[in-house]
Length: 459
Image 1: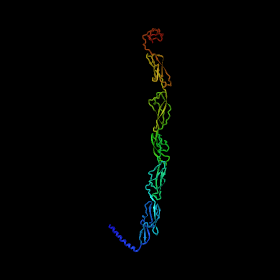
Image 2: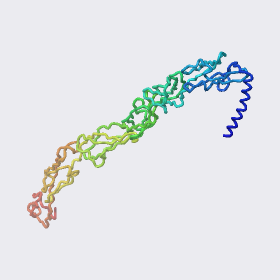
Image 3: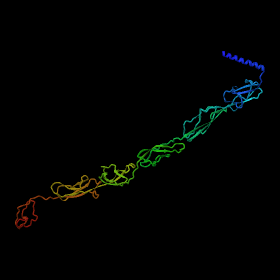
Image 4: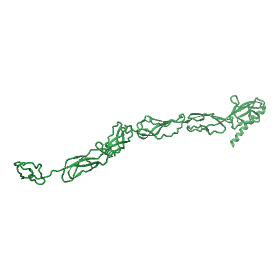
C-alpha cells in the first residue's frame, strides 16, 4: 500500500509541472493521424490483416488509431472519433481481401486489407474402405473414402472395376461452401482385384492300362496332366493334373490337383485254341496245350479232373502272360472233343484138356471193369468147341481196336484127355493065327485084329 502511494506522488509531481507548461504555451494542433496494425504503423509492408473464415474477429483488436500533434505528440483516438468504410457486416472468405479505409477528420484516409482465408477442412481422418485386394467375382468392385466430414464434395476416378488387375483410384475433394477449403484436394489409392480360383469338379472313374503313359487317359476339358509321360501303375493311384480355366485373365490356373486313375491290366493276346482232343478216361493234366510265345496255358481244374464222356466237353483254361505286371491272367473256355477209348480185343490163351473139373477160358486183354463175358466156364470136352461172348459194358466211351463195339465171339475147346492105363503083359498067341485070337484086357482092342501073329515076341 505504501508503495502504491509513493508511485502516485511521483506521478503528481511530474504531471503538474507539465500542465502548467502547456497552459503557458497554448493548445497543440492536430496535424494528422496514424494507424497502427498489430502494434506497427501501417505501411506498404504492414497493411494486411489475415484471418480464417469463421474466426472471431474485431477490427479494434488489430487497429490502433492515434492523432498526431504539431508538438510531436500523439493521442489515441476512440473508435467513435474516426470512421471505417469497407468492412462488411458478414465477413465471408475473401482471398483478395476487403479494402478497409480508416478516416479521421479531413485528413487522407489510411487503407488496410482484411484477407479472409477459406477455413480448412482437414482430410487427416479420411480413410479408404479398402484393406486387402478384392477377389474377382464377375461383379463390380469399388473403393470409397470413409469418415467424410459434412460439407465436402467427392468425385472419383478409377475407383470401380470388374476384371482382375491393378487400379488407381483418385478422389477429388472440394468444399460445398466457398468459405471452406479441404486440406488435401486429391487422395490416391492403389488397389487390386486379384484372380479368383475357378470352381471345377474332379474327374472320376478314370481308367488306364498299366504301363501306358498318362497321355492315354483322356481328361475332361480344361484339365491337363502335369507329367503326361508318367507311367500308369496297377490299381487306384493318384496323379497330378492342372486345371486351366477359359478365362485366365480373371481366374487362376490351379496346379497340383490329385486325380485318381484306376490302372488296369490289358487282356493279353494269345493264339486261339482250336478244339482239343482227348480220350475217354484221360485227365486234364494229360492234355498238352500248344505252345504260345506270349504266355503259358494251364487248366483251372488241373489234377485228377477227368475229361468226361465221349463228345464235346467244355473246360476253363488259364492263360498266364509272360508280362503279368501289364497283362491280366485270363480264363478261356476250351472245347475238348473226347474220343472213345480203344481197347484191345481179348484173345484166347492156352490149350484146354479134359480134366473132369470146370475150366475157365483164359482171355488175354480181358478187363472185367469194362467188359462182360459169358460161356467162359465149361467142364466137358467138346470137339466142336464152346462160344465165349465178350461185350463192352460202356459202348459209348469204349470201342474195340478198329473202332467197333460189336460183341466178340471166341471159340474155345476142351479136348479129350489121354486116359491112364496099364499095358497088358504075358500075352501069347499062335503063330499064324490072327491077333483077334489073343484076348486083351478091358477097354483094349486090336487096331488090326486080322493081323497074323508072327513067331517070337512081337509088338
